[in-house]
Length: 246
Image (cartoon, rainbow, N blue to C red; front, side, top):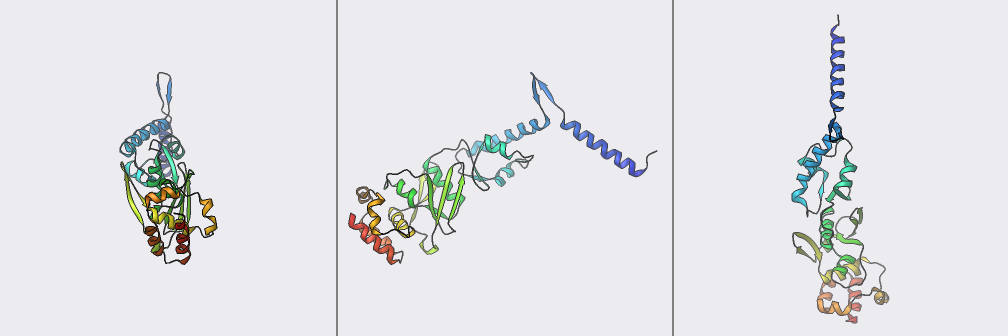
């Protein structure tokens, strides 16, 4: 006869065997072998496809947002599989769908979302306004947070630190269903002169700015007015010397 403790241990052993048995149940159909784990994976993939239907052009989301839709998502060490099949990793804890458009505007929108507050400026904005001929392979922005570099499947995002009192001079840009913050032409130029600490007027010829195109987009007066708002003599002198090229 079994005592109470042995009965308890016996029931536990039976329960454990049942769990193992259930996990080893297989379905054979047309010579296709599907394990218990594969069935779970298929079910979660179906849930994720449903999750992604209305997010085809959604810039980015966190793992927590996915798990709100499906609480079992990314358990059982499925993270790498989901990233490989469905997701692009943007930075720590932030993702976008692989099928999300890969455009300049999408990168700018993502940049604003993953590091806030920030606005597109510096090299990326200069390229956006066609003021420099080079392609820019790093998305650059300004932020009141510390200088930061974030890297992922969609490239590198670099953020220059600006003092809060200089965090102005940007506009809201809307392209299709995307929205991002972009420095004005004048602020882009002044940000560049302010943040490039080693820059002097002797370097102007090497900057390869398209001065003719800049003339069409703004005026000397607007550039000088923007420079004065920095309350920085170095920036004011650089902009004053720069507009002599106009």
